[in-house]
Image (cartoon, rainbow, N blue to C red; front, top):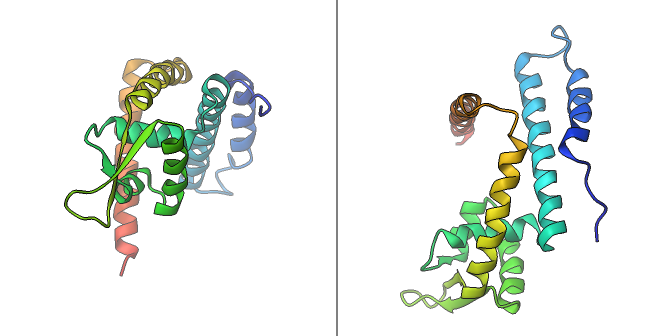
Length: 176
């Protein structure tokens, strides 16, 4: 079993120490400090969720994410569609799928319209186990954001949506 991760409160000092290194305005642009703050928050929250999934359910975050995608698609999804939604390669998904099929959590069938395509879906066991994990996951996420007011959560969502749109626009400008 992996070593336990530090609790969120213990990581606050790490967050502050990390960003203090770039808090001098004359040294770094605000955008760089924002990027580092976003990266640190993401790493901190993702690490906490990974640790809780591993400790509570002995499940990896990629496995949980795959099951979450399939829970939204009761009729199943192709491996390619799952890869796109998870933003990973087909090769990454294939290994996860193999293990989940072997454990009885996924069913894999050949597409009725294209025999070259595999369609995967959660089994009854897979759906039940995912829903149990998802219920706890939801409480963990609420706990991780507990110090934000509902208004702050909505404002952060709004600002992050603008940030995402800005990044997508910039990426599109760089494409040939």
